[in-house]
Image 1 (spheres, one colour):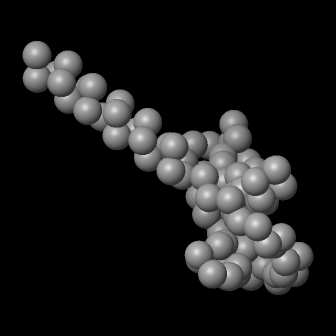
Image 2: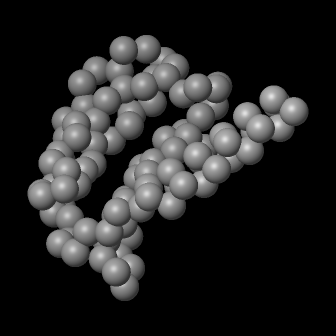
Length: 97
């Protein structure tokens, strides 16, 4: 019974957090900043490019970085802002295998 209740609560929390995850911004994002990548720290690293993040009042640049994929063979798919009728919404980047 405890496991069932725990699973139900976890599902409810995940469902409500996903509903609030999308934030629509009425102002278009600025063009991306051209970044100069530092030397790759090792062969397993992949570049995760920078992006403009909305902080509730304005766009703020988050610089790119080198990262090791969680599993071998991962490629980073960059996030992007998508225009929709209600405004711009952030589509997060993710690892593709």
